[in-house]
Amino acid sequence: MALHDVVILGSGPAGLTAALYTARANLAPVVVEGLLAGGQLMQTTEVENFPGFPEGIMGPELMEKFKKQAARFGTTFVPGDAITIDFSKRPFTIATEDETLTARAVIIATGASAKTLGIEGEKEYSGRGVSYCATCDGFFFREKEIVVVGGGDTAMEEANFLTRFGSRVTVVHRRHEFRASKIMAERLLGNKKVRVIWDSVVTEVKGDGTRMDRVVVENLKNGDVREEPAAGFFVAIGHEPNTSLFKTILPLDAEGYITLSGHSSHTNIEGVFAAGDVHDHVYRQAVTAAGAGCRAAIDCERWLAAESHR
Image (cartoon, rainbow, N blue to C red; front, side, top):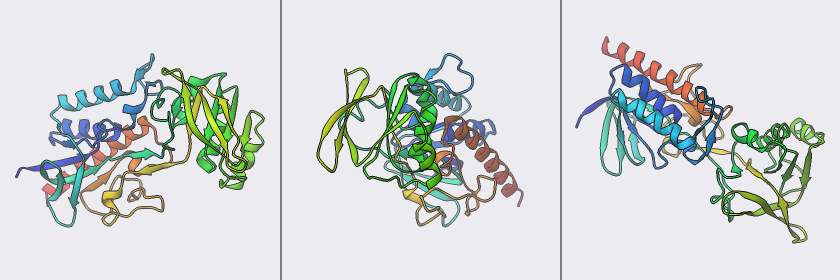
């Protein structure tokens, strides 16, 4: 069984940037792509806030460019997910459904997944009006009706941000009070461009087959059902880091994100690094994930160099 210098778990902006940097350092990285190869940007339409693309670029096209650049310098790609890992001894072992890999170092870049409502039309119109990131997509809804669902700090922050663009922002919440911090809730309720529909849930997203144009809202107290016009529908009920594989192996915070050592990408296991949304629950942008991938690659390269001199 071949021993690899570095195996990278995940193929979003963090994983592929880490692959690019480690490949250029002659470490011949192997990327385990994951079932959602390319990460969250594969579910995004136009990306206008990634530097270097003044006219914007489609999410899948951007990730294809990431992959080609990493491959150009010698990155190998393995399809599918890592099923089991063993960090208890060196070399580390990573098993997929089809093969087992051994590595001197591992970079974890498995990302995070937006929590979905699972309602009719949500998946159909994802990227065509339905979004999970106001910072990414708010610009597309200038002077249009926007609906946000959620009641925590994330929803408050997203809704307030979206008032910069939308003609009106309607927040739908299933209870009669927000669970967000008091200051965040007060800031939202004091915003004149925000309307709140209490005790209600969104049950369906509708459109013309090309783009969404309305959502169905049901009142949980009286059962009333109505349609609300919406060019954009933002689901702001949080994200889940893809860390189930590491729950008993690495330290995770209360929300399940990997915790790192200081301002580095080092985990508490020597030779295991993390990058991107798998540890970052604050920024969650493609460009910050790419930067984190660069950091992890450099930390990994330096660690391997130091190990070889011991």
